[in-house]
Amino acid sequence: MNDTLTLTRPDDWHLHLRDEAALHSVLPYTARQFARAIVMPNLRPPVTTAAQALAYRERILAARPEGSDFQPLMTMYLTDNTPPDEIRRAKEAGVVALKLYPAGATTNSDAGVTDLRKTYPTLEAMQREGLLLLVHGEVTDPDIDVFDREAVFVDRVMTPLRAAMPELKVVFEHITTKEAAQYVTEADRFTAATLTPQHLLYNRNALFTGGLRPHYYCLPVLKREEHRQALLKAAGSGLPKFFLGTDSAPHAAPLKEASVCGAGCFTALSALELYAEAFEAIGALDKLDAFAGHHGPDFYGLPRNTGTVTLRREPWTLPSAVPFGEAQLKPLRGGDTLQWKLVA
Ligand code: NCD
Ligand code: ZN
Image (cartoon, rainbow, N blue to C red; front, side, top):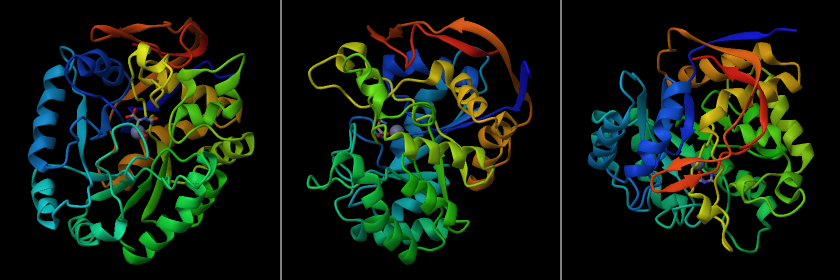
């Protein structure tokens, strides 16, 4: 049994850092685990312009712990009204991608897109300038069952989008179903997907074990075991189109443990350890390095990181809560013993 794992210094290709005190609370965890992260733009109000993305980047850099070289990779929030002109300014500002949230799909997505066709001139500009489109892949039609929203999105949105914009690089974010895994597996080299630790480790039973478990609630919601198996197969396949994106999404504990619970799992504290657990469970630890450190930068057209990080097989207990501004934040699996540990 292998007790040490050395990985290329990895990146997180889907992360929520929030702002102000919350940003200061969570950034050190990610900066310890990852060299770079794709930072989601769903602040209130959302990051919709290049100027806002630049300003947010400065706030993130200023919040880094002493000595950290962590680099945020900035994104903008696509709306029905993002002007095609803004794409050139975005590129000049170093923005790498725009995020598509169908209006109302998830946390802070009210400003999202109501009809993708409205954004086609902007998507054409992105295709031209080489900016990526990151997709929250769920339809929001209230007639569609919550557990079917991703599969329906594949047919209703992904297929027409790919046909209309064949050379736009698209990341199907945090996929949760066998339909999405199959779609991405069969797609050409312009389509990729990120996978979260929670969707690799848990099926929807985790939401209901011994009572309702708000800290396991994220969007897209956890699915049946057959879907989790399809995601594990995708992760362990070694295919370059699947890579790491935690979707770590902090919400203050009182907002999770409320009659209406916000969607999001906080995993930044132990992301690599959770992925190692998932890959080990399918005998694919040898595939973790490329998944965490190669496939993402290759797809984005960015250099891979130099340097390595080390995980050791060493049981440790994940804190059950950590400070989050004035409040507390409860990590997924808080209080549990994890088998792998990132060595400082
Ligand atoms: C995210 C958040 O809290 O910002 N929540 C989540 O459940 N993943 C939003 C998102 O990425 O959907
Ligand atoms: Zn997210």
